[in-house]
Image 1: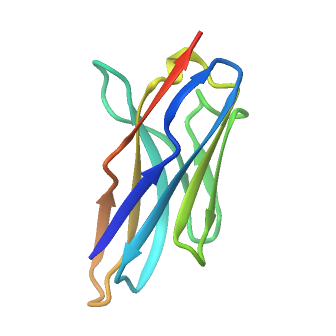
Image 2 (image 1 turned 90 degrees about the horizontal axis):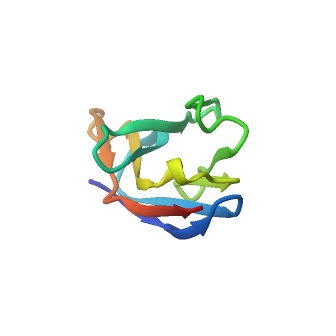
Length: 120
């Protein structure tokens, strides 16, 4: 079973920078797509960015050019570099990992979430 541990959230001023990390541990045959999602107060959870095992990336339009997702496959860790954040980026950021278990079945795991607050 795979577990995710997120870190790096906190308070940041608009225009600053922040980096989130999410480390996957446990038994898995492969870790495929890794991604970040966020949920603002009173809103639904939404995609922020995803990265495949081939390092192909996809971003929400609202963060393109400001946020960068990357991964260290040797460490099963995904990062989200947040540059020039805006107050509307405030929310709980969740990591999600999709992969294949040692039994050959696919799994999807969510992290516990880390709060990011952007002050104006």
